[in-house]
Image (cartoon, rainbow, N blue to C red):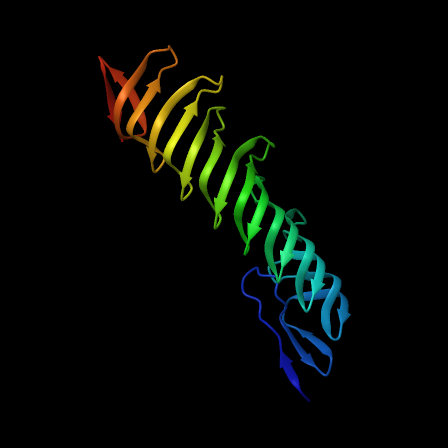
Length: 217
């Protein structure tokens, strides 16, 4: 009796755990129901992971390929879009457990390319570029208080040239950023219309003291 072992499942990857014994499928905790071609998953099928999460969609050559959806074990949608050899690839939508979600491009299971993220109430949180699951390059980030930033990002943080705006659209700051903080030459405008132009150190809070800026880490 010949036993051919297929690829294994690690964590939450949608890769089958199957031994083929004379054409009979023996499952190790995971479950599959659907179509086969030449003894392999092919066509439409549903695959339930040991974690309780499950995939419904297209299969080719024993792996998820094509259009599909991944669900949390409670039945809430986790991902819908294109899948290539068991990985999220191309355009899709990913919903996080906290209710926030991302719509855009994927590469090798990661947010990569152009995309948008939304707060759970549906309001836009970020639109712009991603690299390997991180905000990177030019984009716009909208804070929950309605204020927003337009400029450069690196490694999920504001880095480089950018501008911040009050929620009414008036400019709040323009200049340089380092790791989410003002640094270098810039212009800061107070809500009363007064403003400061000059060098800034890394700060998280700005207070006007006489005619200079007090900087607090």
